[in-house]
Length: 459
Ligand SMILES: *Cc1c(COP(=O)(O)O)cnc(C)c1O
Image (cartoon, rainbow, N blue to C red; front, side):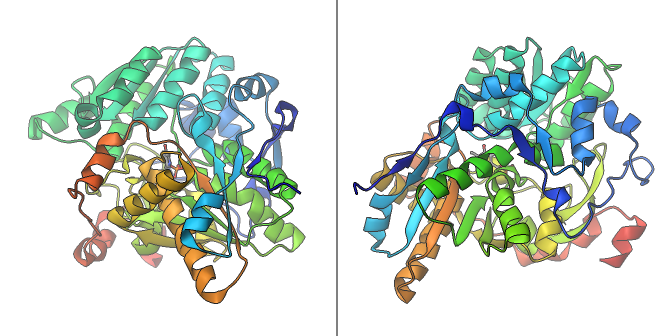
C-alpha cells in the first residue's frame, strides 16, 4: 500500500460537541474567587465580563456540550485541520518513532485561537453584547478575535502589550484590517493605564497589565461591552477540544495510537485541546498515552511555580483562581514566544497536573529555534515560536526512541504558523538570540507575591 502523509477529514467530521474534561476528572474543580471579597464568585460578578452562555460552560459538568450549528458553519472555513506524518523529520532524525502533528496554522488568523474566538463572539452576539474588549501579547489572540468580532458585526477594542505593539507591527496591521481598534498597553484610555504611565512613561507592558485594562473597560461600560480571554478559562479549553476529537479520528485512519501527546503551554488551551480527548480515553477506556506539556524556561509556571490561589491579572481585578503561578506581578523576560509569557496556568490543567495525570517540561529558547529551523527545513512549514516548544519535545522523544529502538508513536500539536515571527528567526539565524531561564532567586520569592487568603496558608 502506498504510504500516506496527510490524514484529512470531511466537513461533516467536524465535531458536533465540545468535550468537557471536568465530567471525567477525578477531582472536582476548585472555586473561583471574587478579588474584592476572596469569596466564591457569583454568576452576577462574572456576568459583568461574560455572557451567560459562556458562564454556563465555565461551570458545566456535562461531558459534552453541543456546538451551535452557526459556530460549526464558521469552523468550516478551516476545519477539519490536517493531521500530517512528519516523515522527512523522522528521516532526518534517523528515528524508528512515528511522528504525527495536528496543524492548526491553517486557520485564517494562523493559530488554534480562532476555535474559541468564533465561539466567544457567537455567544456574546446572541446575548446582545454591543462590543468586546480584549488583550493580546504577540497578537495571535487579538487577530483571531478581531476576525470573529467582524463576522458577528461587533466592534473590538484590543489592548496590546506595548513592546509587541512597537516591535511587531504586522499583527497590529492584521487586527486593524479585520476592523479592530488596537491600543498600546499600558494605555491612557484606562485608569489603570494612566496610573502606570504616570509612574513610568516607558512601561513596556505585560499580558497581566493588558488584561487589567481590557477588564476595566468592560467592567466600567454598564453592560454594553464584554471581555474575551484567549486562554486559561475553562470555556476556552473546552472550545479547543475539537483539535483532539479530530486527531483521535485521524490517528484511527492512520491505524496507530499515540504513546505520547505533546503541546506547548502558555495559558494551556491548545495543549488541553489536543490532550484532553486522549486523557478521556486514558480515564475511561484504559489507554495509557502520556500527555506532555512544554513551557519556556523563562516562564515555567508548571515546572517551577507554586499551586495556589492567585489573581489572573496584574491590577488584581480579575477573578482569583487556583493555578500553578509565578505571581500575578511576574514580569517575564522578552522571549520571542510572546504567547507563552503568562504568569499562571489554566486551573483545569493545573489540577490535572497536580493529580499526576499530565507531565510537564521546560525548555530554552535557542533550543526551541534550533528545532523550529530543523522542522522548517524538513517539513517545509514555518512554525510559530510557541508551537516550536512542542516540536522540540517531540524531537527529544524521537531521539530517545532512537536510543532504545522503540517504535514509539508521537503526536504533537502545531498550534500556529510563524509567518509574523520572521524577525525572531532572523535573530536566531544571525546568532543574536539569548536564553533567559528564570533565576532561582525569582522562584524563591513567588510566595511573597500571591494574595494572603486562607487557602494559600496551606501551600
Ligand atoms: C497563544 C498561543 C499559544 C499559547 O496559548 P495556549 O493557551 O497555551 O495554547 C501557543 N501557540 C500559539 C500559536 C498561540 O497563538
